[in-house]
Structure formats: structure tokens, C-alpha cells
Length: 185
Ligand code: FES
Image (tube, rainbow, N blue to C red; front, side, top):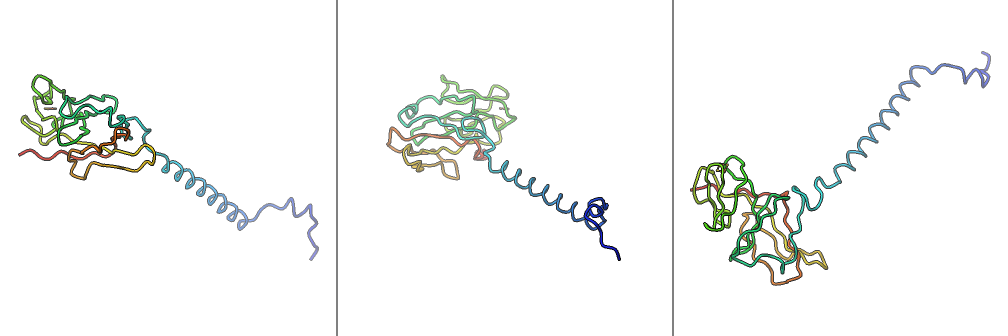
């Protein structure tokens, strides 16, 4: 049988086996690119620091409102910061009844929802009204600004967090970690 010349080899159409090999390699390359892209996207934080859903820095311990004073409203990140005699609380500002935004009423010393009148203590505990439970809370963290070490953190039950006596420590709220309020009654 006559041997193929180089130009005959070049012009020869690819056979089925070569085509399948090529298609398989192309799919493998495409899959690798997709997995790489997905891994990159999942490794990115879902929320930016300072926006609702991410970590919000309230300020240093020395900037916290005095214990027992009126809660402070942070509308951008949907929370009330309440510094009670037992410790600090970051309270989600959406009513547990039907989702209205409740207000702090200074004259009454409690949170009152304008929609159906549910009332809550400065700690967000249920007092009265149609709300099925106390207000939800976020996790608060007090962090050493030099080392980044966590000095104190809200427990799983969402109890008030006693604030460490370090005026320079930084107070942060993780608005991505919400703890459900206790059911009423
Ligand atoms: S939504 Fe707040 S009491 Fe109904």
C-alpha cells in the first residue's frame, strides 16, 4: 500500500474517533472553567461589610450608649442597639407579628409597633399584642482592635452581652446571624 504524503495527511478529514476525543476534551475544559468560576464566586463574601446581611461596626466600647439609656436606631442595617444594665443587645427592627417596623417610644420606655400595637421591653422581650414572640436578635462581638481576637460574643440563646471593660475594643454586629425571639407566654 502507498504511503500517505504530508499534504495528504493534512487534508484528510477527521474521523469519528478523533472528533469524539476532541469533543470530550472541549467538554472537560469547559467543566474545569465552570468549577473554577463557581469556586471563586462561593469564596467571595455574600454581603459587604457595613451593609445589612454582613458585619456592621458600631464603634468602640467607649462610644456605646450608656447602660440603661434609650436604644439607638441603625436604620441602614435594620437594628436597634440596646445597652441594658445586663449587657448589650442588637435587636432586629422588624416586628415578629407581620413585619412592620416598630418604634422606640421614650415616654413609655418600650418598643411599640404602629401596625397592631405589639409592645416589647428595651431588651426586645414580648409584653403584649398579637406578636407571637419576642423580637429577634443579632450576634454582637467585641473584638480586640490590635489582634482581632474576640473578647466577648453573644451566646446561642441571644442573652444580653456584658461588655468588656476595654474602651478601645471594637463592637460589631453580625446581621447575618439572627436569633429568634422566645415564644410569648
Ligand atoms: S406587625 Fe407589629 S403588631 Fe402587627
